[in-house]
Image 1 (cartoon, rainbow, N blue to C red):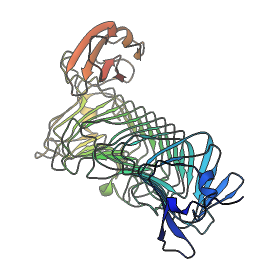
Image 2 (tube, rainbow, N blue to C red; image 1 turned 180 degrees about the horizontal axis):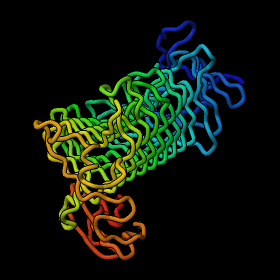
Image 3 (cartoon, one colour; image 1 turned 120 degrees about the horizontal axis):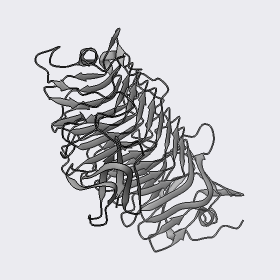
Image 4 (cartoon, rainbow, N blue to C red; image 1 turned 180 degrees about the vertical axis):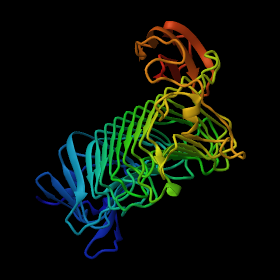
Length: 480
């Protein structure tokens, strides 16, 4: 095809590899596609059918726009990056493949720096290349795959998020066999993120000391991971999820981890520093592959880091880990508090512990802090839910006088409840919470009880936002 001669639209910069130059568009309001770039002289983009190869890096300047063609394949040469400083759309109706030009190439991928609007990525398959965002507006990423990322762009993650205040939505994506973590953020940037219905399979194949998902709290925005599958490869350094506040970020710092399956990692879920976290209705199983019990292996672990976390744990199955839950700090850790159903910190518990231990001993809960921890209403790794037997799987003040006490009675038999609760499930639809025959309690994410009803709770009088409904021994997030 004849090349267009529009060299004046580009700035050409010498690249680090032979016979190629990096290209920057003019910023004069032009919309570019792979097709238009392939017909532009000296763009470095060649075409073979719907396969486009980038020989050099390209920057879409502020003021310009890039749009991906549905069904295209974008091959990238060694070290190549597509940098978006203008606006872009990567929402494809037919799947798009972003991959390396050949088996010897290690491309960087796509780097988003647009500061004017969110960018949507839909139906994009990333292989050997990553997606990095450093814009203030964030991304929506849906129905995408990320695999075999080489860490050339960044070792933070196959999907790397950053820039303080940006928000992200990641839905129905698969992350697998990346050399780096699947999703990672900056320790210094507060990023709200919602991750839903995703699969994470053996990410961080380099086996560095990072989990598959490595996040920082969101400040005024929330961090949410729901209905995802985390499958490890029994690597000695790779956990499943870590959420941290190492920079003392102010704000509500809401964290919600619910409905996930987490298996075969060094550890399951770890919290560092100040936040308000809820861990609800997860399956946290066989996260026991730390090099030794002193190096990890907990289903859930909680640490201070300058500031202190508040963590509520309810409705989880915690099984086959070296430690069930380890508490090394915190402002308040609530694993079940059933004495007063009207209290704002009421938690039915309903966590099931099974065969968590190491060195020939069972450790369902290890309180290695001075906190008094309520852990009522749970089913423990003992054949009879009596105080004497439960004591054998909890390490706390009676074992070391410097530690805080764990209040663990009454327990739960695993079938009924310590309180009278109906057997019907809890659900949320059309602004109402339904739990037939049950007492329904509605809380803010800060723990304030704002509504209560029997069988049906109407949220219409409440302000728009995120609430927690509790009934039938279950916890449900409600977005109004």
